[in-house]
Length: 270
Ligand code: DGL
Image (cartoon, rainbow, N blue to C red; front, top):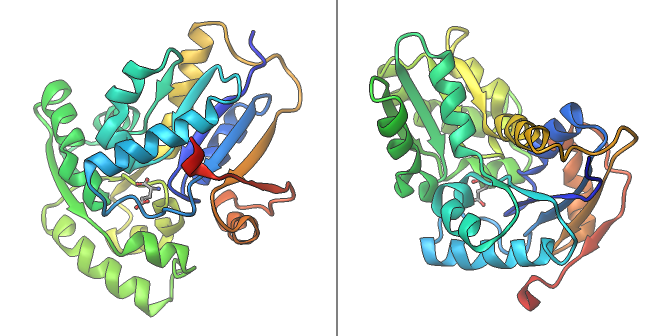
């Protein structure tokens, strides 16, 4: 048993979709969440900048005595998980490997789609893992750079003509390729689940990367006997800009109101 907190971070609010899943399957854990709202989005930045930001995010979280960390950001996980794992002496889970495992278990026709930020797709992380572990699966990847800003603007509901038009254009190729499984490779995308499912049709299974990373950290902590003792867990929230905006927008990602106070962080200090 280990009652120390799990650190979770993302470029902004998207990682809260992973927090929702962590709370669902590990309600006794103490979670510390950091959203780098002053520098979101990461998805159009260079690999060097993403690594620099991710190091600072993790350094801030490690100012607490963490037992493990979850990188609830597809962009950081795709670009620098290995480096962060090498530099830190705690278990660190990203979203890519658990999502690949899940997609491989679900697909029947061995044609899997990936939608993610530009930086995630161009990192080649998913392509490498499928080639290494599931060479019989064909992966079709599509960068969707407009999805994150539209989600952050609250334009994610079915019936919204802007998001439906953008989604139809992005997903047309994936439909042509005949994928039966689609990895939502960015933690913002679960908010688009209804729009994406509506476009792809009922025969395509969607993989939520935040959800898969939550199962993975639970599995690892359990195998090390480091789950928290039974009791009521809680989440502490930190953001690098406009805590009040974070507080207001968080409800859509968590699917419940955020009652807790959001604390400001000057991330450039880390
Ligand atoms: N939630 C991040 C991800 O999973 C958002 C991307 C961004 O900051 O551009 O990739």
